Image 1 (cartoon, rainbow over the protein chains, first blue to last red):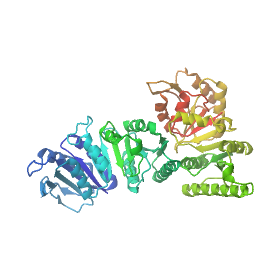
Image 2: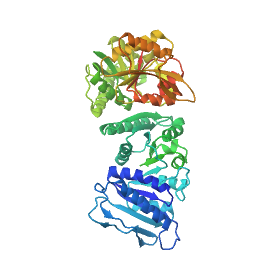
Image 3: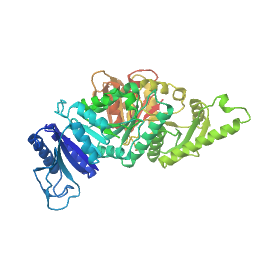
Image 4: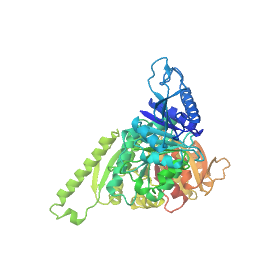
Length: 291
Length: 266
């Protein structure tokens, strides 16, 4: 598994490190920390951004006991080296031994959405983690950026607003779209990391044919079996179109909401066009978009 | 032995009901009969009288196959009384007839919670629920643990005694810890507090009933708040036992939103 954690020069970025470290520890993932700076800052990485990325990296490494870290015992380097126009990479660490997993820190200059999506495709990441301040005042990590990343990324996206307190539950909204094994596993990992209950919410409605509704409940039955085998308690309920938005908001108040978006997902039909944008930009503690 | 009729279809609700029932059989002397109803066809669908028996045979066979697929998928070990029974007809009427003729002690079925009080009200006021000769267990989720909440009816002392007696008959033994709950509707405030002062009439009555048996409940508590929020508190219980609420009101709304399985006694 590969995780791309996006940081900016705002303290908000440091909030995602604990969550990133928990997920990485549970999944033994390769981790890429990426900062994006505006173009035209000369040929050097932005010092404020570089400094924030280094702090995030240090906090991430500190999360693992030195002897148990899959990211290896290494002497940490603080120097970014250029590896192309508007691309910088933290100089490879001087290693005492071989690490099992890779931790890479990179900076790109350019349009944030384009650069993040480009890096995610280039590195073939499975999960993008974005942070956000409580007041929604992240600089370039504005609501619009999060919405664009959430809707255009080809992989799972986790937008973390504030996980200061452990989430009460994870509510996973299941539509008509296919549910991949990777999505099931991602939810499994996040439920395990937080030791929390899982709610599976089927999106049904009047516009849905009986066959469509049956497909959704069959999918939920499969998910229920999958999580039962892994001893993760899962609660089942259905949400009607008129209650979906309120249901999502309510679920997000004290927990993580996971939206399973597929090509044929109901979300486009049931949710207002900009709801996903509002969810990832709004007051939810964390939103996980899965494909 | 508790003789239970388990309604099964090839769907998620039945899948949960089957698994929950299987868990119950580990702690209760519960033996199950699986029953499935194929809907009554129109005259046009059946065709002439000559093909009717063949048609019915085909439908029953398809029903058996559907149940078998469910059993194969779920792979649960459950002591069944016999081969699943497949009926053709009106679901409520068929199950009611089977409950009476088979002298069952419990009817079990799955229910997918939509949070809609209207749908829930429609179901519990259906002939099957209203006229059922035995308690009905509505499985909304798979819940572990051993805590059973007895949601005490407020006014009717006789009903309270009957509900309690029915629950004790079914859930006898040491597999469960009973807890008495009294629910009071409040719009803006959600709270749970122990009943210590003896001021709650519903709880006092219930506690005195169990006291007459020389037992005391694990806890007795008063919960108040809007139904949706109080319902979230009920998810800690393996079962919520209560009488069938016929009228719309806070108690019905609470049960409609309750995520735990509900055992309706009378």
